[in-house]
Every structure is written in C-alpha cells, then in structure tokens.
Length: 229
Image 1 (cartoon, rainbow, N blue to C red):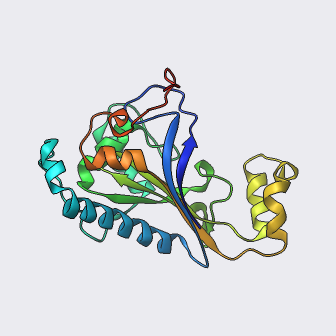
Image 2 (image 1 turned 90 degrees about the horizontal axis):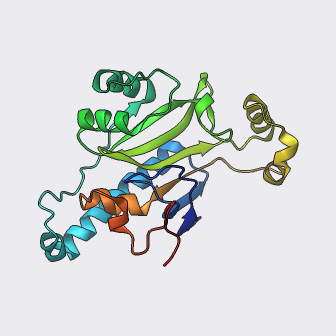
C-alpha cells in the first residue's frame, strides 16, 4: 500500500521544522521486513534527488542552492546506542540510553555522519507497541529513523504480525488490549509479516533545498498560530 496526502500532527511547540498539518508519503509492504523497506526508502530518496537534479537544475540555480548533490547509495546504519554516545560528545544537555533524540542531538549526530543515514535498533520501550522486537534481544526492536544531517525525515519499522505477541507488547506498555480490539481483530485471522514507513515530504523539500524553515517549503503552512488560508 502507498499513500501521499495531508496528515494532522500534534506539534505542541512552534519550531522551524514542525507543522500541525504536513504532507506524508507512507508505504506498507506485506511479506517484507524492516531491511526491505529501508532499501525502498533509500532508493526513493536517491531517485528523488536525481530526478530534481536532472529536470530542475535551472530552478535550483535560480534560488541559489549551490551545494545540491545526489546522495550516494549505501546510507550508513547507525545503532541507537552508538548514536547516543555520539550525541553525548556533541551537546551540552545530558542525554542517556533510553532518551529520545533531541533536535540538538540530531544535529550533533548529523555533523558526525555527514550525510543521510539510518538510526536502527531502537529500545523497544520508547517505540510503539506494534514495532517488532528482535528475537535474540527483545529490549531492542526493528524500528528505524532515516535521517538528514539536520533532522529526522522518516520513521518506520517491521510491525509485529503475531497476535499473541502483539497482545503481550500492548500489555508491556501498560495498556489494555481490550481498548485495541479494533486493531487486533484482523490479526486473529492471520496477518503476513509486514513493514513500512512514513516520510515527511515537507521536510524532504526543506532539507533538499537548504531552507531554514519548513514553512518555506509549504504553500499554506498550518501551525499553532495559523489555520487559514
């Protein structure tokens, strides 16, 4: 399944990279794991940059983008634990294993990585209940973020398809499976292994063109202070 469309976002703060209404490109792939959809995502980013470079070079020059470059294949896979260690050396605020990665940490890690990359092997406790845990270490899961040196562009995972395991993971989050019956019901009848991701199209344009604010990449941005036009 593939979707491109508008989504609401619960952005509680006004930042240069967050909107309350965004454009998302999402996929869900049956009989696939997280590595499969990571390859699709990497190919999409490279193809998009390449197509823009081929068809819009005059426009790119016209808006003053001097360092436009098509990313090279083989985005590095950086384990979350290593990302935290890089962030510790690059930011003043304390950060530890199990914390989410702050914007300052994203920039510090991005400066070290120097290009697009994936953060993989996230702690299960800070990812959604439906992210599949590693069989050999359930404390980490098959979730990933695809990063530009400046910020996160995409989040994804292989999703748990086994009913009993899914119920167990809901309970691990301190949630009541009965409240998720609408989601769980199809899994009783059998679901294939599946994985997917969501890509922020607005952030992709922002980072591709070196814009300082995501609002410059959107015709009618929606944020905490602007709903119309």
